[in-house]
Length: 419
Image (cartoon, rainbow, N blue to C red; front, side, top):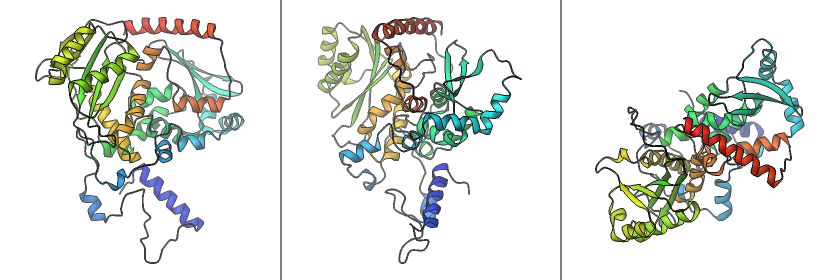
């Protein structure tokens, strides 16, 4: 029987403990199999009968033991963006990385083949002793990718996919996230194998949406947050703060998502949640929503009218006409994965889930939502790792940063309109 990656890693750790003498191989009066996290030991028959995943719209929790209250320090460590893999990789200094790059056989073979293959879209170069790959994608965007030695690749993939702030996203977005910073030979295949064998993703399930023919093009909206689509997710299992619903909002132009937990599904709570969003992004000129009572009530209608917002209602019994519905399936899957892996309630997982969606390139635009809104990519754990490895200390002045920002925004607007 084949083992998943997490099971193989756990078995290897147990064997190391047995060999070091820290774990008895045959404890008296106990089981020969150590406990795994908070999961009780089960028989083989029970494990085979229990379904591995529950790929439904609900965010379910099987046992109350897994959701035991966490103190502040435990919660911070659980959802920290620099946990586990980061701690080990950050110990690698620049001199060590330079030496590992020179000694790595796969990188050495790659560098030897550079002279044999003249490719216009990529080439390799050295900067301050480190080896990089300069790559230009189909949209004309250039990247400087740091070459990663063999011994660090698995931990880097864990940081890019299994980290709480990575969101256990799919193969395409994991590839896009890694390619922004790093490269190594056959990295695409390594990423595909890693994501497909992720134990948490298999348990959380994947979207059951079937492929549909492309819909008719709509007029392009070039101003961020000028048009929003909103909807409600729920009811969900009650969180520790008493919330059971989520108000979601999506910018049609940039695909920038928002998610606000709600304790009750009524118009006052919805209006308060919308105000918290408008305080950050400004008042939109148009909002699309369904015909739910919280969106058609007198209070909500009056609020929209006073704010100068035009309300467009989606077709009845046709949720596909609301673009935010697609985000719901992705958000639910991320929350299921994080709740299962980190044993915390869904409300605590919303910030890292939003970070994962905002920092990953969107397939319809080719840019991450944060890049279209802020004009720069968010500083992710992968970028933090690269900065730690490179050891560069760049501190541009304000004028240079503003000029560079305006140039980047202009280029992104041109590329965005072209796509």
